[in-house]
Image (cartoon, rainbow, N blue to C red; front, side):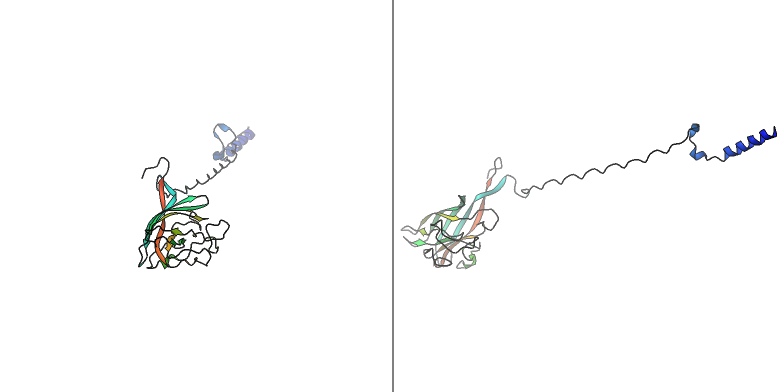
Length: 224
């Protein structure tokens, strides 16, 4: 009897020493759950492309045309308006020029700087020459020539010339080294001999005009 009492007391003391925090309710043995697998980091989306035309005015794009308004240099009366258009690997220049020597030829070139501010237009610099070639004959497709070389103007008896000329290997509005926009057109005193370097012995500068790009509406864009 005494032995049974001692055993009962011993069992009671052991039960009191049990850590109740680890024992689940209802006497069920606790099981440690497996560690959660970290969620995968979502892939970073590819950057959206930038619209290269975002800065352009809505409905307007650069046109393959340009204009130049020629004004006389000091002491002269030569003037005119020209249109330049991209055509077959070069540009075609058309328009009318007045104030020339009657029944005479005058040299006619694109020059490297769009600056007509000097009284003699010397501020326009030399011939536009993006290919680094010698001055040549634009009538000969095999001849080395400047990008700004064009055939002589021919004036009528009233000193008026109808212009229809070409400059080869140059562009309008391309923004590269061959672009004539921002350059100048010069009319000279004398005809170009197409041989003398670097200007064809063309003489003084009688008129100068800066080449400015034109714009046209795109399809569906606002009309000008």
